Length: 256
View (cartoon, rainbow, N blue to C red):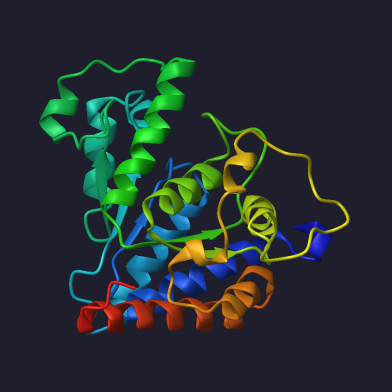
């Protein structure tokens, strides 16, 4: 992000603004976080709690946090119970099993915690992301590391690829750098920047997709702007425009 004159704060602000506007429009949010202190998951929980306290119409708006098998299998039953209780006002914890199924708390508690191996990490993260895709309507992609990740490819990349493969709506915000920017370049939505990174594992799999593969209700030109803008307000406006169009198409029965 430093190449674009941005900091981690810009990414956090972008996430918070997008989440706030979606909540205001009655959306339920999903996130595949690992609950690390000070991370994006914690920020999202705080934002949802603040929104519920300030809005008289918030109702039961929540965020579902999907915990992959290798994340929660390290935790004791007591810790998982404490997490679920502490987040009861803001979030639901979805415990994902080895094969992508949701585990009931009592079934998970019957399993002994252990340190997961490399195969458990790779497969567990993939099936969690598949479950998230199957249980959501759209995916918003921004930022994302391309090194130091676990799994078969960068997490943001795998999430975006799974959505593209299934025809799920994808909103690609590349103006904040990271993996999302690399994907936008590969889909030829933006020009490569001078310091473009070499290919990371899985990047070549995006070469068969085009801007028309995003299925997000935006025109090609609008998707180019969304993929390039570093301005949060402009990005939010385009995401909401696309979602409104998708909702209108669904209401009218138009699958396109």
